[in-house]
Image (cartoon, rainbow, N blue to C red):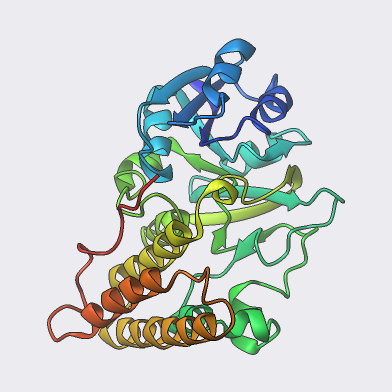
Length: 316
């Protein structure tokens, strides 16, 4: 079995995929690109580059399902999950070396922006708590970014130049051990089409007793959010709230789920009211009505623990 393989999941990634593949050349033993029904020629660019094996899905299967497809197609001990808008700038050896310790299940490198600045707040986070997700849903973390809950959640105190054991690095530049992926049953495809699937996977990985390492000697330049820029606002809202609620009902106790559901309900009502007052001609009121309905369903007796029924299928 080869040592390191890379999986790149694409969806309308033509602007970035060629540079991403070029940067990976010679740094991994295998590359698999799983394209989720792009309509911008992404699959043709991958096929023409001849640097990777291509799996072209006829529909958008979501990030988690596509990542599982790519991992199954690889024959390597270690798997690098890499976003198509991430360009690897250094050797991946520091990440691979972290796995010499059998207790390590995942390792992540440093993500920098186009100016070379570390993406603090995104690169590494702590696992969300009911309080942190409640503040996210209420919009407080955007208004008061340095509040104590958000500082802890987004690891704003992290020194990006020092190795550390961490909780939740971003899935944009993440290496995992194949055996751990198999033991956990892969990525949860119910986080559709994206958001919180990496948080869920790493939460399960840590709960299984494996360690997660941040290694800043491995660096990638990351643009961020390229796929969702092409998605309409209605879908983005449904997907984000749907995945947030799914994570809460899967990992929090009843009180924590209740707190998050109430925060989603209140935050959606406030967003809808302000939207009607200031942007009524173009504000997605109907979408927030759906989000409010889903949040209310989570509050009903006997339904706090439900996972099914969340808005996991939006148009794409």
